[in-house]
Length: 38
Image (cartoon, rainbow, N blue to C red; front, top):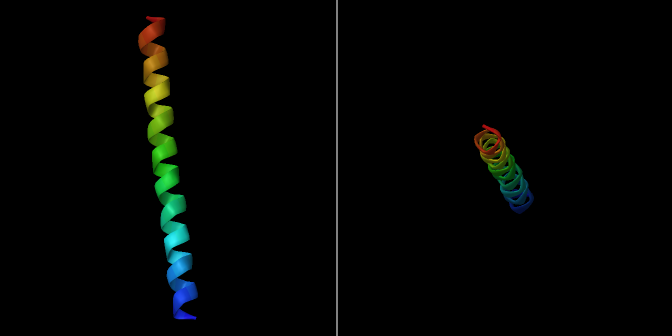
């Protein structure tokens, strides 16, 4: 049971980490787009 909880936490952490990376990526993309447009 403990191992399952640990795996669950790891998966959740991975998902949160991915969300952060995705968000940063989209911020980079949008800023790049506005920069090239002007």
